Length: 490
Ligand code: CS2
Image 1: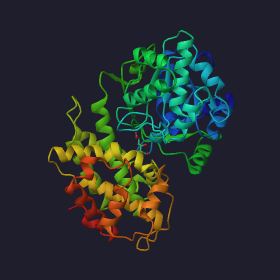
Image 2 (image 1 turned 180 degrees about the vertical axis):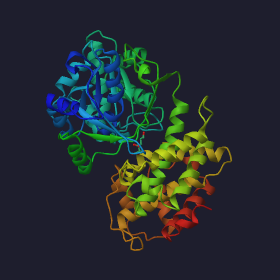
Image 3 (image 1 turned 30 degrees about the horizontal axis):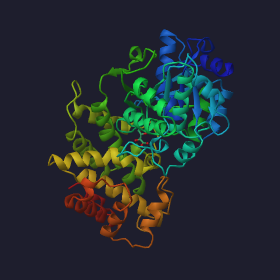
């Protein structure tokens, strides 16, 4: 939308596009063009296009929603990214790396056309943890995931992530092209390896030769992605309209900090992301552990404690006299479970995280982060807890995060007269199971703890069988139920 760009260019503090997006071909297909993608991968690729050019525009596909797709197409893929620093200085960048968008619920024709084209080299993904339908323990596809079930029966017309990746790869093979690199950018442990494993299992079930070809030629680098990006709200869009004098339905706010670490294991060409700040490494695991355990783990702790204690935003929890010390303690507990990373001081990283969380200009809702707890806790809280147990380190902060999640589920289902909270939706794919488990069992901490530990394939054996772990979670939960937040730091 030319108007968007012209309006922006007239305003002070707005970086206009320094390239003509239409001059650049599409080289990437991306699934999941939500706020995070637009603040992160699309931003890095935009910087490459700005500084170095290349045919690296992105064709974006939304699996579930149609609104973002319509808005993207109406704005020619352009949108403004508001980078809000703690000091109050805002920077606005117009991003031009998204070429067009499609909604899977309508048609996937253009997406598969691009996936089968020699010009496309990468399929990147930010679809959230729950969308894949891969069992985390076995790495095999989950036969109770609706998309997987559908796609196994209809592999030519898939509706889910894994089915679509496999169809895309099958088309490449049929066209005698090398595979595209599958770049998973979701907060999952060993995200590339996990997706490879699910793809291999799915492909093996529909076409053995295809599975063999993927095994030999496929590339699924692991990645670590980081940029705090709240979901866009009506307030944000109003602010942007009045600030810029133009309506931008896709505007998003984000923080100045951004990080992307990728294993340099691509099947073909890629944008020169390393020239715009991306770290290309041999092994992402230590970075990923650091981020998942310190940032995301603390985020989950904040989300569950904060939401029930009246902290609407992360920054409010960081200003809460009892919650803030617990967050700082969590950073330290998580850091103790990590292998050293050359040139990274975990203490400084923790300091930086606290400052990022405190950013007064970022309105990151605790309720947003609280979503999908069953999908997030395993890698953020349970894995470091298992390591801490093995190494004889303190587990109380991980036990607290787990108790806080149980308490959040309990309050969501029953409400809480002491906190004056009405019930709320948990927004978790296992919400019904959680509800059933907590139905009519009262409010005793042991009983509640046992009920949620009993969810199938949820609590790892190492923790479920640890008396110390079970006791700690029960103890913390009892404090929360009694409204004794001030007792938890001890
Ligand atoms: C958050 C993440 O919503 C959540 O679960 O913890 O989205 C977090 O903001 C990002 O991973 C930061 O990079």
